[in-house]
Amino acid sequence: MPRFRFAGLPIEVVASQPGDLDDLAPIYARFATAEPPRLVITVARVAGFDREPGPGYPAFERRATDDGRLRVERYDAEGVVDVTATPVTATFRVGPSANSLEACVRIAASVALARDGAVILHASAVAHAGRALVFTGVSGAGKSTISSMLADAYPSCAKIADELLVLRPTDAGVTLEVPPYLGPAGVAHGASAPLAAIHFLVQAPFDRREPVAPGAALRELLRHVLVYVAEPTTAARVLEVVAAITATTPCFHLHFRKDPYVGTVLEIAAPAAGVPAG
Image (cartoon, rainbow, N blue to C red; front, side):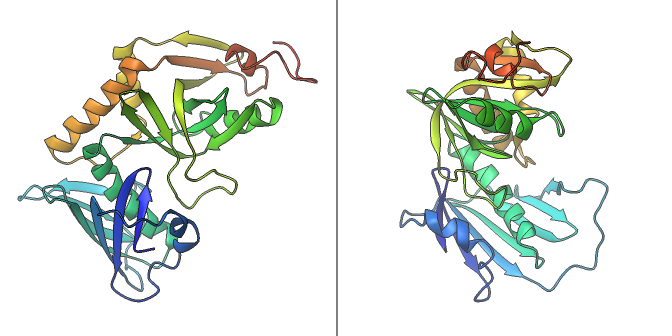
């Protein structure tokens, strides 16, 4: 899997030793491409780092170097992303864990995608009537719960994303794309759908959907974008992409009780058999 597409972004990964990428191959190899890469990642797997997880784990510490590159470091990996290069280049030293390796791929992809007109979002999603409903929020807000619950309760819904997805504004509207990644079984890697709405989750003793104005939605959505920013160009690109998304996409605060009846609030359908009214 030396070259693959990550939600429309062609990436080439160069390993220092044979077998260094075997952990990712079962999923990523299905997205092989011959396109010229817009991101090139060089990886060296090492036996381990003699460090302990810091207080910010699983986040990476980040800083801009004097020459404008992004340096990131965590107890199990470290590297530099050159955002001034074309294509964007990244070099990492990574411990033996597959999750450590993939975390580095995500970091580099988050920067390159912003330059490619897209952003990675911590969110889940279901497809309904040919369009995607996205659910995002802080850790524990219920992102996985609501997408699984709706898919189980309503035959017209299918869970298409859990944990990570990519949003890309186009002339025809915003498209949701599910990138390859190590994660829960059953995620439809490679799935895509036009975006219908974004929901910011709020746990509550009732079910209610409240519209969020574009300016407030912009600020809220930025909190859930996965991107490592250490210089102004990347920050500006991310802001531009998120502003385009929230200007054209209905956004809501969704108060819900972790009960399938919330599907009626979302106008998915009348309650399914056995689903009590709210």
